[in-house]
Length: 29
Image (cartoon, rainbow, N blue to C red; front, side, top):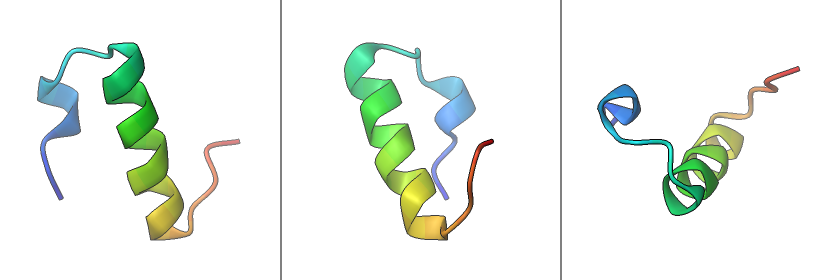
């Protein structure tokens, strides 16, 4: 897994984070 925490949470960065998160099959809330 990439070090997402090291990336600035820009709109594009956040969108990519969400897509990667969905791939893990986990839910944030």
